[in-house]
Length: 412
Image 1 (cartoon, rainbow, N blue to C red):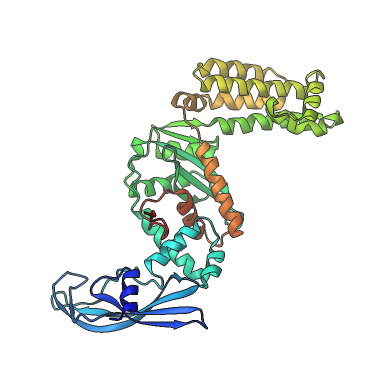
Image 2: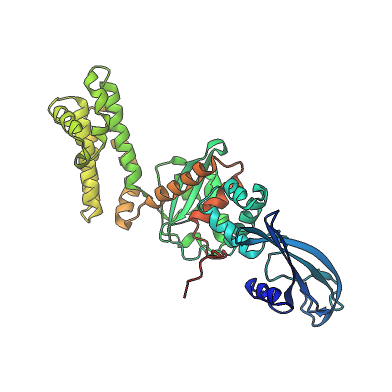
């Protein structure tokens, strides 16, 4: 073994019986090729472990490795297949630098997974001069294998949210609210998504009866699914979703009244924003509105009152009397959108109060949705649901069984 082959044997992390036999440098093609060799004539059986079995033959294989400087690097080896006299099988030996069936080394796989958390697959493929199909194969194989090893046994607080993804339509995302991770994404937004979740949850060691609460929006389909799958679990309606309903009621009043009062056209954002965030113009607009006697002014005061009671309830004041007073006011307001809002709050009051009692929020869903949306924008959409979800699990699933970045080693 020459000095160069010995050096690269160490650099590639090879151990007995493998070593670098030859190096071929092709600067015109921008490539460097390492030829690996194992001269052992007898090896243990990869299937049954029988000792010292004869080599049946050797199969030539190649793998793309991390670049050496500016050059694409490839490993080549004649891989032994063991003919086992005990189990009668002829099996290729496991390789320390690559997973079975892969055309990449393990370090190359790790690089692809690291890049895929920030870059679209087509961009990674262009950087590495490989096809997007090969990159997707690497991402899908590793993410699905890592997710199979995940345990959901400690999940007690669950979040559920929907997401629309272009031509793929709607999907439902289930979250672990404590660890702030995606547990499952499944197509659709109906009650059947909960059945799919239960099956997957149990397959990962989760116990539905151990789930204490589920945070969700006011979707009837989700409520039906939760009652069917986890009838004894508390349902919580998050304040973020309630705020959207309050804002929608306010906007409905403004839209009805703007037909008679044109000055309301430019006032929308002032009514929806918190007063501390008003611009100077919005301050002037809202000063006028509050003294106008318009229905929109009453609707805005009701919105402000809901935000006040929401903060009081979050900080320990009993939520039930606050909400019952607000519901009574809304239903007597003579503003149809707020009358409907009061009826909605009354019908869902138990779940609303549960969220304050248990101090649960589905804000995790909003942060995860932003990660998903960023991935969609980077990729300019996804062709398959499988590809989409594996990127979601990679970026928001907090998988613990993935290879670390090849550049994560601390410098001494």
